[in-house]
Length: 418
Image (tube, rainbow, N blue to C red; front, side, top):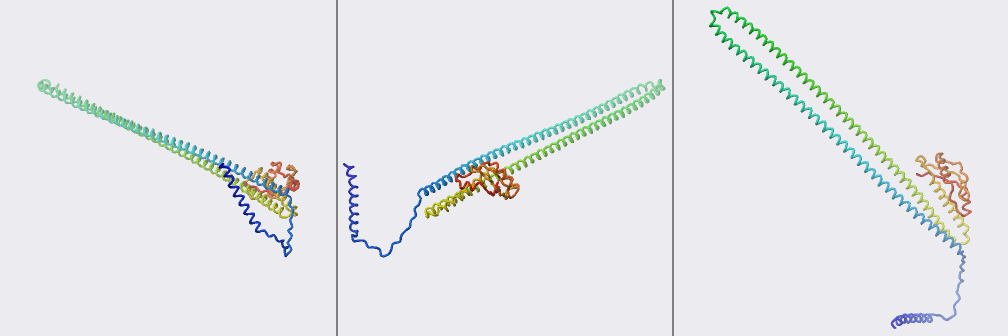
């Protein structure tokens, strides 16, 4: 019951509105006969438009837009892939640089540790030499003290012997005084013999003292020679240590020179990589410029197609001129595609930049290259361009017979780009 009421109410409102509109129409109608216009009415001429042609033009325009969108999508995908590859190459280069830096630091730390160990060994050698020299000096002093002690004891023994002999002489003199009368002559002789013996012993003692002094002088001379030999040995070892230090410094200088050469080689490598990256960037920018030019050309062709479509809709008899313009646009488009195909197979050197070559190419209907004419322009550029054309082999050709025929005899101006 509620649903029927809900439907009935809008129906009644709609019926009331229709009745109101009908009343106003009846009131406003003039039932008198219409008056003839005072002036002549102008006649509008119309031109019939071929719907099939308009539809074909619209389909062609849509196909061109779709092709352009696909080209933009493919270009974007290629740019993304190139950017990822460049980022990956940069990351790998940074990793290699970090590894090389770590290896260089490890090698430097190892060299420093070796130098410190060598310095410690040399210091220990110097300390050992000083210790041995001190021990030698102490032994020499002990030896001199022992010799002096021995000389002192010998002197004391000699003096004691002389005192004992003097005491015996005194006792003999006392005994001789008791027998003086009886043995005066013998005592005088004995005294004379004793004095001669003492003189002999004194001379012998003198000779022994001279021999002892000579022996000590000889020992002193030998000790001096030993000291000089020790000093010469120490000087020889010091000279060897100096030569070893010079050899170590030369080795360190050689190592530093090699490290500097390695650093310069690394810098040259980095500069070469940067140069390569710069050339790659220039090539990428050139390719972007070429593709932008191609996109601009397609856009111009699209705008021209729109103009042709508008002209076709505006006036029927102008169809032949629009068709000629469209054919010219197709010729330009396929010429650009042919140049792009050749550019993809063209190896360009730095000395070729800024030069060009104009060359004639005969092409079959299926795009097969039949003949390549003599190039006009820079010789190196023309030879390289001819090789690129031969390497391309087959060129892109349209299906339209009229456009295909115009492209069978091409005069191409080729400009090398890095």
